Image (spheres, rainbow, N blue to C red):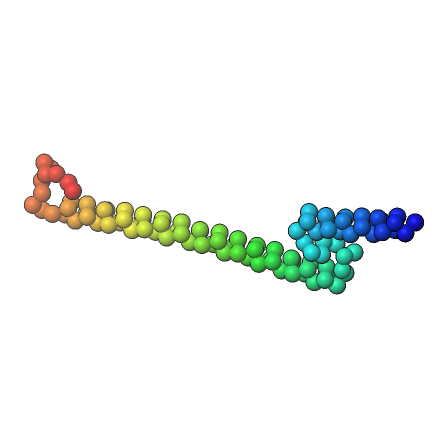
Length: 100
């Protein structure tokens, strides 16, 4: 009978260890340690919140990068337009002259 009790206890500990291995968590359920589990759950929630903020910031940086690139393209177009307008205003050029 004692051997059966030891076998049952060993099986319980094996299942607990297997749960820890499967989840990667020392305290996988409230049954393992209620207080530690509650603290861990709170911390996991905080980490998920920080990850969401980090993802949002990365998306914001990407949007700003796109806007900066678009602004640079518009600036380049204005410079080309200005050069062509100045060339068109040059009285020394006629219709047969090449444009830059």
